[in-house]
Image (tube, rainbow, N blue to C red):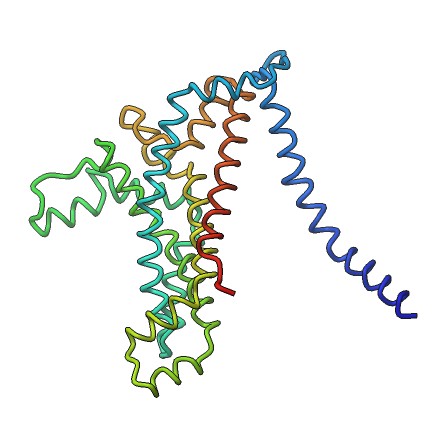
Length: 292
């Protein structure tokens, strides 16, 4: 009787999970297998294709453009990730405090997240415009500059401009992740700390930060993966310029596939990028694992 009940429960559980497994198979494992297969071929966008084995991967090791784009993506990640975390952590501390306007602030900070990356990029292109954009106008009104700033004329200013846009757009998402981690910490710990004379700094240092290590690991992994997969903002805001100095790795994969018609080579780059992200994610989760 017990065995029969357990079998029925297992079947019911399998039926509930089946749609999710089917979605994962169709939209992840099948495309992944196709990408692996294409990476082993000389696969033009149009025309006949032929098996080439590991030739694409061998060429990839010697492709300076790919490694330059990967290095640029790493620089971008190292800039945008701390900016996101610092801003999101401060906002999470602010909105965590009980108050009449806490809900309003949470909504306001999260609103940019619901805007699509393409729409946000177009919006900030207008804000940065040297003729009608408000950023240069505000700086000129404050007498900080004498003429409009060409935000995308140099590699460094273009990169920092995109970092500012992404920080504005994605801080709310990271804030929600950190806020969930903060609210999961038992209030009894803070009450005991206050009784022992701990001030807010001590509570933050010895309670909040240590108990949020798993939340930090999740938020950091999501942020790093999102940064390495950045494409829309660079394609819309800089088009890879000036002088191809702002081309992230996904942008280079896109060019290889749809500009140079080398789908097989682009697939090989995608596989290598996937492996890099898997290794980085495991390292981050290992370093920030819970002591338990």
